[in-house]
Image 1 (cartoon, rainbow, N blue to C red):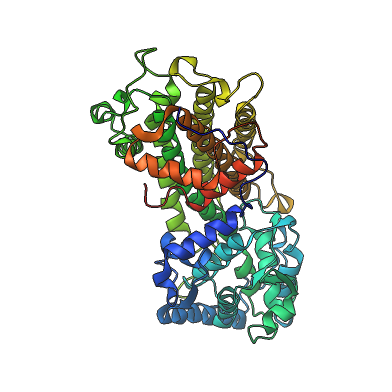
Image 2 (image 1 turned 30 degrees about the vertical axis):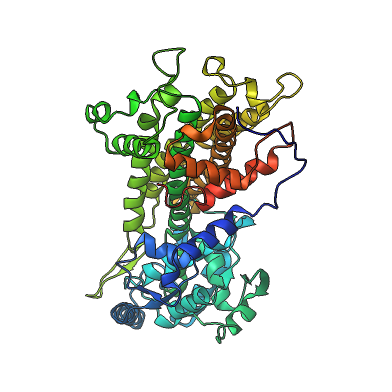
Length: 533
């Protein structure tokens, strides 16, 4: 045992929140885009480009062709109004009230009423990055040219996004069908000079927010209020955040698992390429390869003498984390389609046809998010079992609970309690919202996806998982201090050193909360993982 026992009381340094670290990391790792702009045309927005806007604050511009397409659809709406033909949401009421006609003199009033009446969301305001994602995806969808909205309205949203002025959007109120009506209504209130927005942490009335981008409150034309509300951008915005954080979480989980494998002197046979070629699920094959690369050169593996094979939490890492890789990949494919889709209703087409449909229904996003959430929760369940083995595996030569004086000291015992509590909470959060449906609008909207709840649950599960993986890093580094780090693989040694730059060895009992939160923030930011995997 090489570690010098020096007791340090209190936290090593102040904790930076996960959001701050995540945003800063994105900006640091992508400096080349600082003076560029992301082009939006309604069809080709990539998730990597979305990340530049959402996390690094990069500005956007509207493609000229998309501008022309959107203006053409608005002219089609104007023709419908002049003809007096009844079309849903243009000159009729909404939902169950679609059988009520609205006179031409009151069509603009209708659009304003749509936004005001639908702004009924409640709960905590969404964080900045969530609102940025929603704004970005809402603009890109409107640029498909199927919404019948003037470019003046779209440009106003673009100006807010580029000025980092973010409408205050309460988190709860969408049922994931008919679009994310309530949250998107709060987004739209600001362009009427109503509601509230935030810039640089300062809350502003909607009218002042518009003044900061040189605009007066807009008067909406027919269809525009409905076009601003009817879409899946709340689900896709939060779903995108879940995807981005999930991808980082997975990489951190693989690295934490590699440290635990070394700390427990695990057998390397379960990672052998031949094992996974015999059952070639893509995610499983990838995770096994990542672990082989991380552990290449380790002299700690295969030195256990107490058994001939390891427990499942060590032996089946590729078989459990691999499905999570594939679930995130599935979510990614659905998000790429969704953020470049028209999810409005009715849709306006180039030939002048206006068709009512159901592209606002969030079932596909809800199902993809539920699968990703369950798969990621399993990553945490497996990590918690490794944490327990790090603390209580007498045959592997580590002291009980990784304490220097077990009995007098409890060591990291209760860190495992915390991980167990978080994993158990995730089991409750994994109950699928998408299999439920409560009808709305007097039964006219008789099947709702609840995909918005799926998205919120995914982010809550990730909050817990980042802490669980933080606990594994804490315990694995402590175990490696007892084991001796000289035999570690070069890449895992770098990961260990990053952990130790954030938290010091637990030389005697001390409060562990700040250590866990600091490591969880680093998991979220990618600080431990960057360039290692």
